[in-house]
Length: 281
Image 1: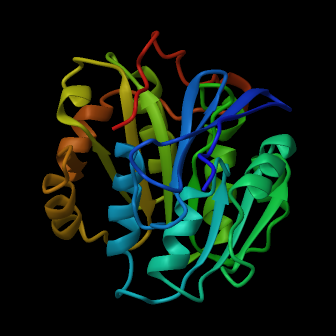
Image 2: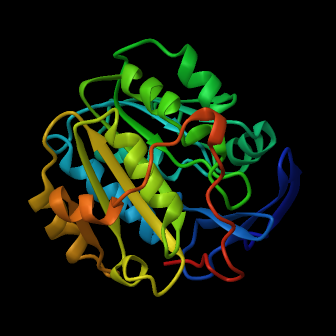
């Protein structure tokens, strides 16, 4: 059988590469301009290689009883890692994936196709524009994993954006976002302040070294109107191969401090990561 070979293609927003994993037969790493974006094992869709993806997976596992189908809107497509995970763990789920880079979508669909019956529909569109046109109360979960290069775009950080997310979610829906920052956490704190103006419950999941300001890294924001199952989430993230902490309640309020909500007119992208900040977890 032929060995898989890397694929390189110019896409709308850079140069994408699909590189086979020598240790896993049908697994691939997707990078864009050298930054790792996604990892997919076509034979094991529940395998989440990246630390942040596993943390998102832990939240998804605790949102509803095991196996219950959900309606999910993904802003940011990558290699469709989490849609594949949900299709495997919650069969029958209806999932829409919105990715601004149509060239990247074409690459992924061509080389890493999803089964026709997976319930995953991909759309080439801007995330905020799609969100603003989406029906109200149409999603159980909204997952934002959007990076322009290695930065979260400014127009996906404001109160107006958060309000659109809340409008599209059902009453007990949950918003998840993959964010990235480092001390003094101006971006991360502003995002928590922003989403606290719209949602009643917030939690933040990150590796302790990131929270202590030792390094730049990812943090998962969780926002909802319903009470989150933080004990279950804490257990799962603490037991991970790369343990994380779940911050919520008073501790999270202390972390936010005097940070102000972000408005469209003063929104900025997340900070540029230092060289070598993102690696495979």
